[in-house]
Length: 160
Length: 160
Image (cartoon, chains in turn red, orange):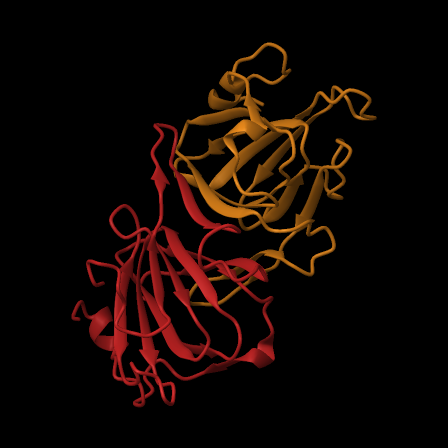
């Protein structure tokens, strides 16, 4: 991740989130209705990714994702294939997880994204999307689709 | 928990949530804007509770909690001290966690609640409250306050 939280892809937003330490366990911010880039609430769900597993690729037509990783460590990859985008062809690779990368990633519609665990424990995404889930609203590609210039197999081998 | 998901406290709602199994890791529902008891979105945050820790007691004046436990195992205790409530004096003890107790608990304002881990790993609450956090809107009591008829120490010893 760019140290300044300025992603290379237009419209992708990364926001460092507050972790309020407590000897009994931390409180972890995720999204508020008065946040600057809050666009409405449609659905909150969690997605667990087991060690070594890859969940990729997905693209939404209208839904914006607002996700963070409160538990475990995850690699998120975003690819811009949008016609006319100033960042068309760019790939953003973001490692997410506490304590150093507890960040909300807002992924606007039209971008391909996928993720895979890092390390030996499951990773948990919490996603507050601006629309409720609609199965007709998203598209998928296989994780090894040659159209997207990222090879998950290398990640799983410990590369990239 | 009552097997029929009918809590003994008026206004407390427990809703079994869908866990969509996947060999790569499950997708776990939490809250949708078209759910029957959705009352608006104010803030989503996570609260981690470490093994053996107790986070209690808290009561909100206006905020409704909508929480579930996607990771780890947690005991949630709710106490009704509301004047004029048909369930005044009742205590609800709910064990939350996957796979058997993946449930959304909606706690209306006016009820005392607290929680503690069960087991040897941290438990994670994801809460979608209907109002953003406001420090002036909640009250606290110490975990061992004699006014509330639940002893966390017994829970930590393995009792209750």
